[in-house]
Image 1 (tube, rainbow, N blue to C red):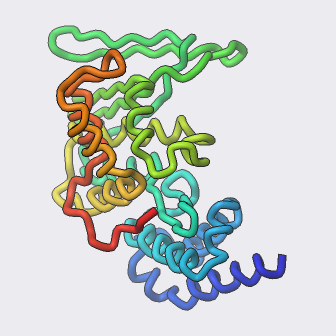
Image 2: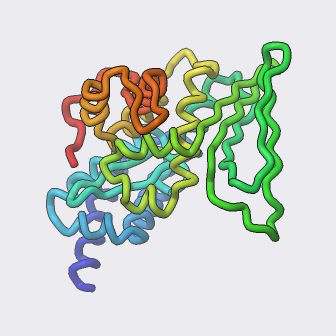
Length: 273
């Protein structure tokens, strides 16, 4: 207990020491005190992050992740962003609300809905007059919804337009297979939130963009840090255009690569696993 308190005190002292830097970095509506308390709460709620921070290297990567999260204007509250540990390496991960926050910056989006579809739900997507129409009737709360079978995102635009993206569970699992921690707590315990983030990223590609896409580019880059992109490229080279596992197609690979590939040039200091 003493060691854990010491580590937490060291982290708190380091963050408080950089309060001025945080204030200069954070959006005006997020005060440094609130951000620091949220980051410390996130640390205390994850045994994986706590264990990583027992080493100087781990504490350094945690501090770097905290500052990066601040630079992206997100709170590490588990909704906008979260911290994930890979051994002694802590990285920050943008979550669903953080991605939505950046998408709303375009000023052209009215609302965004992301939902997981379960086996016993009633779900249909039809095309009429060149427009997609989606209907989803979730299973009654008193009944068993069954296992997750897919996820979708609907972006309603202020001009009346709409962007719809749907992903089958197999597509989400394919992206998961390239994660540096596919069986880790993020995917294991929060599959629905991870799946929502993936379909939201895909919907972003067809949604209106703000004049300055810097924030969203940084969020995508931060999310990509959690995936082994070289592993995916190697698999594509080995598989070629041949069908495998009874259904994977070349276009499926191309879509997955787009979902887990950086949209800006990668930085040289990307943390290693």
